[in-house]
Image 1 (cartoon, rainbow, N blue to C red):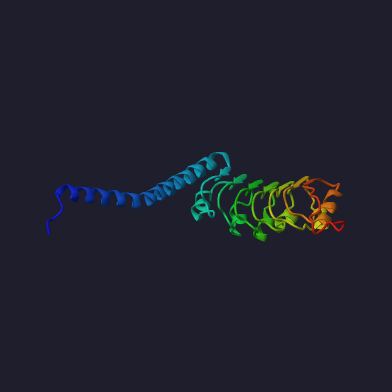
Image 2 (tube, one colour):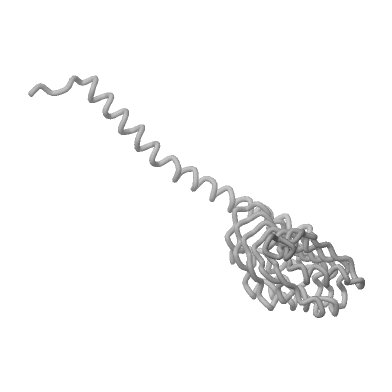
Length: 212
């Protein structure tokens, strides 16, 4: 049996090399993206040390890295923006490490609950949990003493403790639009006059319309 011509060996080697490069390429891309994300986080922590506002939006985070708490240990943060990541939960220690923040943006993540300890954020005035997967308002919404602006737009909230919400001492504005609130809850919320509240009024579902 005659061996294949050398040109065919060359073609085989080239094809093999190309295949290996194609297999390695996604890994290299992931490594580069991860490296850029780390550089971005460190850079923004450095900026926060100057302006007291930590912006970690769009950093591909699944959680708040422990390194962030370390880098911020001597900084009295006033604002924290964690929006547009893939974060599923916030640890209880967040309230201890960033106890002086007045604004917290958690929008556009994958959170369905918050630790009760966030209610200890005594200076928190603005909280944005919009575009997440909450099915009820977190404890922090009712208990934070200075919370004035609450954005819970576009979640999966069906019921709200309306009476409890009305007793919140500092609330000025609540956005509950684009949530599947029950019709009775929507009516109760619309009757609130002590602060401004926004809800989406929906028509009755087929199964609710008894005239059909």
